[in-house]
Amino acid sequence: MRVLVLGGTKFLSKAVATELVRRGHDVLCAARGASGEVPAGAKLIRVDRNDPEGFAPLAGERFDSVIDVATMSLTWVDEALEALAANAGHWTFVSSISVYADHGPLGQDTSAKTLEPLLETTEARTPADNPAAYGRIKVASENRVLDVLGERAFIPRPGLITGQEDWSDRFGYWPARFYQGGRAVVPDSPEQPAQYVDVLDLANWLVDASEQRLGGVFDAIGPITPLPEMIAEIAEVAGQDIELVPLAESKLAEAGVNPWAGARSLPLWVPGNHGMLAHDPKPAADAGLRHRSLGDATRAALENELSLGLERERRSGLTHEEEAELLLLS
Image (cartoon, rainbow, N blue to C red; front, top):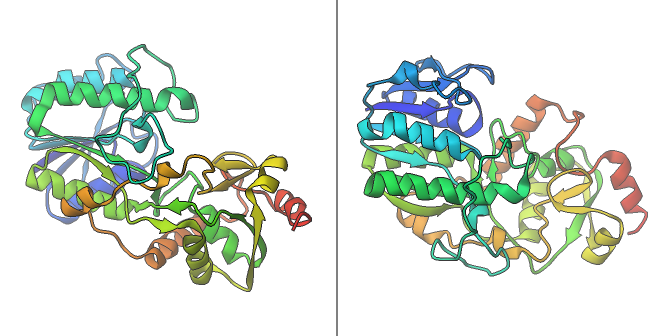
């Protein structure tokens, strides 16, 4: 196949491009080239999606498949569709479980209500820039892709993506912390579920979908595991002389610990929003999404953390000083 990856220089889009090359496809990556190199064997086409004429280098080109991972720009999505959709055999748009209106219910699937689409232009380019807009922009983008491509459109909605080149710290915080040993604060949340998808497993599925012309909308996530079991297994795989110290959710909240992500947070902890990490994984599994074990995912995440540096400034998690304060509450 001749495949265009919109991106191809970091995280998921790079993993997709790498897998496409490995399978022998003709791979072009449309990117500025500012975030890194494209995989060996892929060709970089310099495209700046902030430029209204950015797709000019691809005018008239035909592709068996286009794979777009645009984070949160409806303008980017619209311009890509206008420039490329007519000559594309299949189109993947990577969305997010953030499109759902209610993250409380467990076991939701793609029939659940989504947020109202946001059609206005925004300068935000990442979820951190405008968290309230992220899911709504993804909904609007999905709608545009489905309107234009119909049955040629494949829309995966990933949950938490882990592994190679993950920059978010939302999963990697835990193997990195446990690797360092000692007493580690964990949320005492016996009723909370958790789930994730490894970036390489997701990339493999996106390539499968392109090859098979798979259409439709899917929650791209893995099996549901109780959070305490997930944390315990991560500790067993990555930990060195580690003691887990569960703190009640009420104590964490009183101490100003944030859930999920960001400064002074405990990643994977989502009080009141358990459904965000408990979507029905069966439809995607039936459509071919396969998952490595939690142990293998943990080892991949730890390898990534070690390459990034354990003492770097983090986007999510607790600092050593913050954790030491919390341990006094145990």
